[in-house]
Structure formats: C-alpha cells, structure tokens
Length: 154
View 1 (cartoon, rainbow, N blue to C red):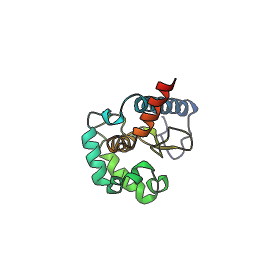
View 2: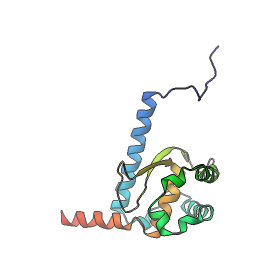
View 3: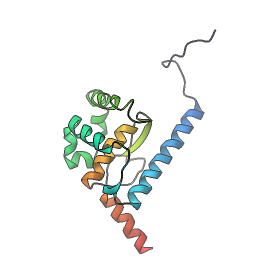
View 4: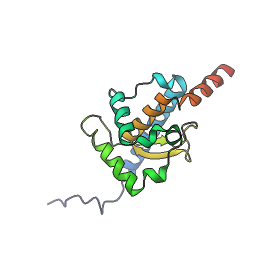
C-alpha cells in the first residue's frame, strides 16, 4: 500500500523547481514586454480587473498612497501580520481566477525593470492586485515612456 503524501517531509523535485522557474521567467518577460510596448493604463490583465482593484484598495488602504505602491515593502508583506492579511485577500479568488495562487514575481520598485534585486516572489493574485493598481495610478508609465524613447532613438 502506498504511503500517504507528507508535505513536511517531502523533498523538492528538481524537475518541478525547474518548470516553476521557467514559468515564472516566462510570466515576467511577458509582463515586461507588455508594459514597455503598450500604455500601462490601457492594459487589462484579467477579466475581473475592476473587482480585484477595488477589493485590493479596500483590503489594503495603505496602497492608496502612491509611495507604498511604487516601492513595495517586502518585509511588511512577509511579516506574520502581512502574511495573514494577504492570505485572507488571496482566498477570495480561489474559485474566481485560474492559477490565483501560482508563484510569480512582482517588481519591488515600479520605476525599474525586473532584476534579482527588484523582484519579490508572490502569488499570481498579489501580482495582479499590485500591477493593476500601479497601471491605474500611472506608476508604470515611466517604464513605458523610457522604452518608447529607446525605440525611437534606435
């Protein structure tokens, strides 16, 4: 008889980690291409952007301030209080959004592109909530305008 799966003692399968890393990189490359090619305020990331945005700002009123949204505080997000608050937010999307809890990366500083120093591992719904709000607040515009200037110069 097969032993029951115990996540506490399970090791990491290298193939699964590699697939996860590939998917994560594909996602960040796609998003970076989007925000450098199209005006961010015109982007629709999910069929329920309005709902996510409203829920995010209601659940996390501190992100109504552009500074908090522009420069994410990873320590606060991953503190025990932050984790609990995010967990309550995330669970709402379990049946509403495919891959809502899939790991992805979000940029700490909205004015910079992805880099090892400028990335935080989050769930897909956290990414959507943050980036929808950044796009609507114009915080990704700098990235877009810089990319457009580079295109014209080349």
